[in-house]
Every structure is written in C-alpha cells, then in structure tokens.
Amino acid sequence: MNYSRKRKIKETAIEAILFLCALFSVFITLSIVFILSYESFGFFKEVSLKEFFTGTQWTPLFAEPKFGILPLIMGTLLTTGIALSVALPLGLLVAVYLSEFAPHKMREIIKPVLELLAAVPTVVYGYFALLFLTPILQRFIPDLSGFNALSPGIIMGTMIVPYVSSVSEDAMIAVPMHIREGSYATGATKFQTAFKVIIPSAFSGIAAAFIIGISRAIGETMVVAIAAGGMPNLTANPLEPVQTLTAYIVQVSLGDAPHGTVEYKTIFAAGLTLFFMTLGFNILGFWLRKRMREVY
Amino acid sequence: MEDIRKRIRYNTRWNYLFTIIGLLSTMVGMILLCALMIDLAIDGAPRLSCKFLTSFPSRFPEEAGILSAWVGSFLLLLVTALAAIPLGIAAGLYLEEYGKKNWLTDIIEINIANLAGVPSIVYGLLALGLFVYFLKLGESILTGGLTLALLILPMVIMATREAIRAIPNSIREASYALGATKWQTVQWHIIPYSTGGILTGIIIGLSRAIGETAPIITVGALTFIAFLPTFPISAEFPFVSFKWLMDPFTVMPIQMFNWVSRPQEEFQLNAAAAGIILMMMTLLMNGLAIYIRYRFRKKIKW
Image (cartoon, rainbow over all chains, first blue to last red; front, side, top):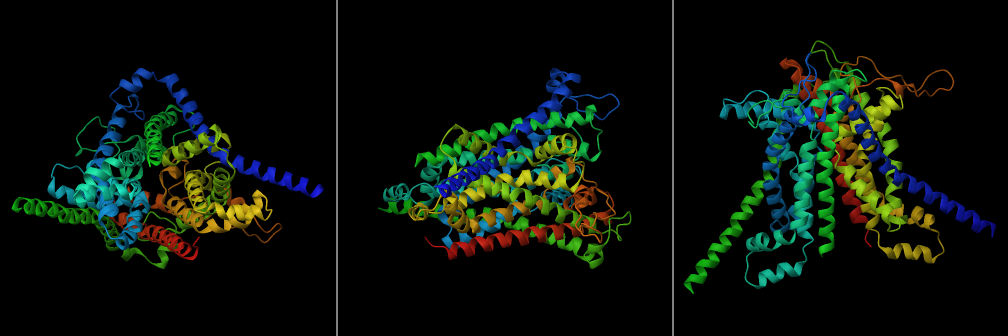
C-alpha cells in the first residue's frame, strides 16, 4: 500500500517536471514579445509611430537623427526578393527531381549533401558573397558596387534551397501511390504526372515550404551584414548597397550603444518589426503544413 | 498512328529533358559548396599553422591567431549543451508521451513551431534584454551559452519528438502489460530506443550553434580578446572554479566576421583560414550526425 502510494507520487512529480520543461518554450515566446515590446514602447515615446512608418530616412546615429524604418524594410524586401527568385524555382525543381525522378540510391546520397548547404555557418557565406561572388559579378555588371544587394541575395537563395526542397519533397512523397498510378494508367508520362498531378496535390505542403523559405530569408543576418553594405537606402536597385533590419541591429550592437539611449532602443523597434514580419509567415506555414497532413 | 507515335515521342522527350534539368538544379547547390571550399582553401590554407591556433588576435595580421576564439566557442558550446539537451528532451517527452490532446498542448506545439522560425538575431535581442540587463549576467560566457541554448531548443525538442514517434505502440503496451508505470516505460524503453534520433538532432543543433554569429554579437561578445577565461581547476580549495562562466569572450564566427570586415587583404586571408576551421568543425559534426542516423536505422528493426 505504502509502496504504491510512493510510486504514484514519483510518477506525478516526474510528469509535473516534464510539463514545466514543455511550458518553458511558451515562456521564451512571451519574454521575446515582452522584451521587444517593452523596449520599443520606450522608443515610441520619443519617436512617433507616424514618423517610424512613413519617414523615408533612417539615420538614428547622426547628430540630427531621423527614424523612418522604410529604407530598412525596403532593404530587407529587396534582398529577400532576390533570394526567393533563386530559392523557390530551384528548390521546387530539386524537390520534383528527387521525389519523382531520381533513383532511390541517389536520393539517399544527395539529400544529406544538400542539407550541408544549410549547415555552413552564415558568416562563411558572407565572406564568399563579398570576396568571391561580387568580384565575379562585377566583371559582367560594371555598375555593380562593392557592396550590393544582388550578391548576398543570390548566396542567401542558394543557402535556403534545402529548406524549400526538403519540405516540398516530403509533401510530394506523401501523395499516395494510387494517385500516381491512376495518372500513369491514363497514359500520362512521368513529367506530366509530376507537374499536373503531384504538384497540385502537394500544393499546401509546397506553399508551406515556400513560406519557410521566405521567413528564413527575411531573418538572415550575417550574409547581408557582411556583403550588402551598411547604408540604409530606399531603393529597389539590386546593384546598390542597402541595409536590412537584421544588418542594422548588428551594426548598432557592434558599436556598443549604451543601455537606455535611443540608439539602444532602436534595435528593439527594428527587432519587433522583424519579429512580426516572420511571425505572420510562420503561423501561415504551420497552418498549411497541418492542413497538408490532414488531406491524406 | 503516325500522329500518336509523334505525340509519344514528344512527351517522352520532356521526360529526358527534365531529368537533365532536375539533375542540373540539384548540382547548383553542390557546385556552390565546392566553389566555397576551394575558395577558402586557396585563400586560407597558407595561413593555417599551429601558431595560428595558439596565438591571440593581434594588430599585425601575420601574428594574429584564433586561440581565444576557439576556446570561447568550445566553452560556449559546453554551456549550450548542458542547458538545451535536458530541457529539450524533457519537453519532447512530455509532448509525445504525456501530453493530452487539449488546448494547452496545442498552444505549446504551435509555439515551438513558431520558435523554430524566429530569426536568430531576435534571440540575441531577447538575451540582451533578459540575460544581460534583467538578470544582470553581463556579457559573459554564461549569457552567450544560454542564448544559443534558447536558439537550438526547438530543434532538440522536434528531433526528440520525431524519434519517439517512430517507436511503435506495441512496445509501450508490452511494457504496461508487465505492470510497468509510465515513467518506467519511458526510462527503460522509450529513451533507449529513441537515442539515435535524439543524438542526431542534438549534434545538428550544436553544429548550428557553433556557426551562429548574429545573436552573439547582440549580447555583446567582444571582437578583440587577448586573454583566456579563468582556468576551471585551481590549486586551492575547492579546486573547481566557475569564474570562467562570467568572463568576457569571443567566438570563432565573430573573429572571422571581424577579419572579413577589415579592408586589409592580409586580414581577409586570416578570415579564410578561420573559415576553413569553422567549416571543418560543422562538416565533421554533420557527418557524425548522418553516420549515427544511418547506424541506428540499420540496427533497430521493429
């Protein structure tokens, strides 16, 4: 009797501890939101929301500071756009090839190697974009400045291919075999089956993969901090230097802004903007993936 | 008849064409990876030497080394592993084995999926506000390690869950049938059988932590450190000292970043040399993870 009660207490205690560990992740999110909002609140006491969202100049470190976030958002969207125009088509092609065309053995070898692309430290990619790709691109595009949005954008795009391809591939493999066989039975070729049957059936999974890619590209920091230059620049020209939200945070952190100053608070305002941009995409992606799992 | 033949030829041609296009797109990534390694090797290999590993950073590029950087990276990784592994496995266990299907577990699940997608630099800002200024841990090794632990926690949790999910229910039922309690089942069956998957996830998480730069910059790691943290073992009682946890630090990727952003070419060669070592560490860890996954998959058959 006594023994079984002791055992029960132990079981309950263990469950409670494990539950607390799981709950800890919620605490992380809450503290992210709290800390970003708290410091940003201090920032918005000094700078109006109107100036923040409609100003076209971002010069918080100048003697006469201006706090318009648009140049940073534009820089982020520009590098993200370039990265996506590389990553999305390439990732989709790789996924179709691996799931429908490549022999099984080849897939087993290629997948881990592709995943290495996402494992390389981003600072190494930054080095590569600045000192290898930019000089090569400059030979073809003489107008390209030493720091630009194009070269880090391309490198970022290749870097996120494995994120896009692996989730899309999972979605395509999850399409049941009888759907493929049905298509073959009507006389369709492999190519027709892949593009007219498999891709539409796996659509929500592929969309989720694209969204993961988008949110990766928005949050990527070191490649752009190294190779895109440090100039907040309201431009859509990929040949010019730009600064992204993430690169700005790095720049200020390196300069060691004193705690409590406006410069210190700007990085939290920039971080909050970044957090909300990625949060929207993450939730959409999660929902799409969940839907994909429920279809079959 | 002729028409149909033509049609078939046309359609099968697309098959071949796409096999080539697909193979080429797969190759793009690998070519980039090769170009990257060759470029690093050409620039950095001449700088690699024992002296490079045992010297502090310096104003003179040919005397500079990465001693404080790799020691910092190693200690940071130690703190990260100690914090993230138990927490991550426990959370994963709860969600797979204990959690009932209710709104609270749903929230935890969505939350973890979201955390995995939060940009790393946002974790840096969290750590700056929480560890550096609120908990007053300063710009120390402890702060840096905990920051990276938060960052890889979702990866560890997800790897744990996936590994546990692969265990068939018959194993659990057999254990319960013998009168084992839930924890006994977890302790003697679930954890041992999922070790391979969990280990793979942990190693991949740690390999990401070692290359992570941005969040460590925001918590204020210094770029120029010409001393080592306090040695953990001392001659006097109590012999073990934890003072190193509170020392300032730098890590490999930050050292590399610092050298890349200098205009002089000699420093950029140093950056390439540091890059080679960084790449070797991540490749080694990823290789190990792939090997473990492969071996456990071969060994366990349900």
